[in-house]
Image (tube, rainbow over all chains, first blue to last red; front, top):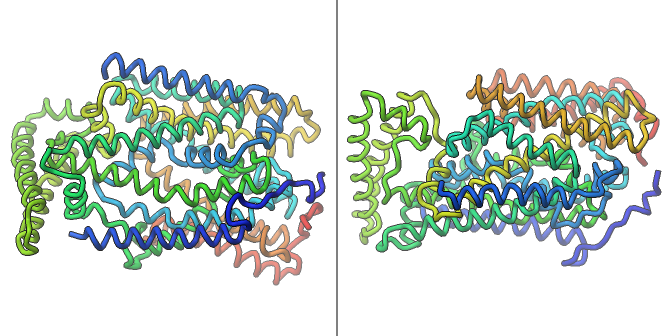
Length: 45
Length: 558
């Protein structure tokens, strides 16, 4: 079996570290839900 | 369907299959056939994951949900980005470092062979039924629209899938999916734009959005908590997160996609890609359905969207009365829609909306009466009916071709993963541990063909004899995910829990899932939560009651 160190990993192409990318995704999700909520309220019958 | 549409339809089918075969060439080792030699870039894996999940029936039912029920289904996907972040941070590096072909192989490294075999069997049982349904449901819809016999449609779809999946393995599947996803996205966007452009000249895009809102089709977020309602923000954020963790973290049809990545980072990016684009894409599909609804406010819809059942209805004695009442209700609804659009004052708008709802209810009742008279269901035909009657020549053929290949894409992912688990976790583990690479590839091709033929056979059985079984099979499939998730949670995070405790936990979790389905009325998404928590709790209790809960396995992962 191959040594674990031989499995290539790489930093993300943006935001430099993976934890920052994960934080970005969660903030993005919150923003999307917020936008959908505004949409729901704004166009409610 | 004009001759141009038929040409486009067949050209698209031939292109996609040929492209899959071309990109799948050289898949003559187990590593190439099952994992594409671990060479895939993130965007190919990301689009393939999306395409496998977006089966044709999702394509048809999601637009129909937008039409009938509005945007609230989008909440189901709120858990997806959360699940993707958790998986990218934990599961992706673990699977890559364990150098496994299947997710279940990891369980033997962590626990023992019986736990691996049990979970592999759960996967095979749940996926086997769903592969037939993934073929049957779109084959039924397309055969009605194209006027082809159902059996011929199912055999054509299944035959093409078997051809490129058996020949090119995961590489053919993935690259075919990439083309597929690009064309799906473009066609849906075009369909939405055309629905808007076909509105009467006095109805602008903003008017259309306001009308969809007035009809209750733009309610995207429901903050009221109700465990019996599958579409609210809490179900989406909590229960659906469990579902997506199970689906993307333990289902081989998804795991195999990101195991083909050339590095951990590429595999992570493929999941992040889905985390960012999946929710807006679902919103777009539902919004297209809502715009088709607005289009049919000004263009009279048929009493039944399913063309064969509509013809049957026309020959019935009750048809003339139903038709004239439907026509009247449509005219009232159209007039009310115009009043809603033109109303300036809140009071007059409110009165117009009330009038609109009354007319809509009348149309819904008449539609339900027509469906009852013909004993049919037409939800999957709403979008198809719009496409075939109102889209320009050529585009009709392309969209029908895309729906055709969306089904093929989902089935190719299913049979490819079923074959991989059959060969790696069953055949090579229990029957031929010393199988050569060449024998493994031959067995994988044979297993792919067998699962493909099985899917076609099961589709014919489901489609011809038990149409209502489709819904049941889909729900039964969701019963298995929670226990699979539970055992992987133990494998990754509870290092002190041993093999026997995990095995007992899986059996307890599966029982809890069945009990929740049988004895409670909670929405099926919560079965995943119940089963996953039961697996973890029971396994922990057993490991405390019986220290070690059995050995962690001879090849425990450090």
